[in-house]
Image (cartoon, rainbow over all chains, first blue to last red; front, side):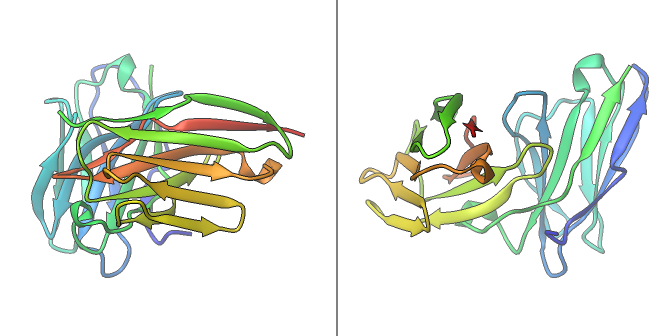
Amino acid sequence: DSGVTQTPKHLITATGQRVTLRCSPRSGDLSVYWYQQSLDQGLQFLIQYYNGEERAKGNILERFSAQQFPDLHSELNLSSLELGDSALYFCASSVGLAGFGETQYFGPGTRLLVL
Amino acid sequence: GQQVMQIPQYQHVQEGEDFTTYCNSSTTLSNIQWYKQRPGGHPVFLIQLVKSGEVKKQKRLTFQFGEAKKNSSLHITATQTTDVGTYFCAGSGNQFYFGTGTSLTVIP
């Protein structure tokens, strides 16, 4: 158990819909990262937040958005869902900024299926 | 932009054989980390290398950071079925980049 929690574990929805994925970081961690992992694919970095502020953006689509709240939990919003958005979405947390070589602790992931 | 590539993408070995995965960056990295993801699981941190030419060992696993800090390798000696999973390198530059991963299958 990494200490990072993600809800829900599974999500099934239809194309065109909007969903929200939630992540609670480890106690004391200020950074939250979101990743997308499609079948047989690597980890695609989406976005990073540090202490409530966006710090880095990766390959995040305009239909996707995220935020980190004052209590440091984070939400990833996926809208106008397409079949290709079906994937495993991981949240990770670290104490500070991984750009300085910190370990990232991953949550169990949310498996999204868009039908 | 910066890319971190890993080879091979897939590797099947007989139990007891050795295994190596290579990680290459297009730019110099300040450090490199290795993660393991078991089938159906989430990535788990294994180790971090910071110094040029650094070599670290964890039991049957040997990690190496290249002299130019642009490549790294993970070598597993005498693989076991518990080694099954996907191994990712992740490098820190001005961002944090995960490699494409190597999926290891160990045949008993």
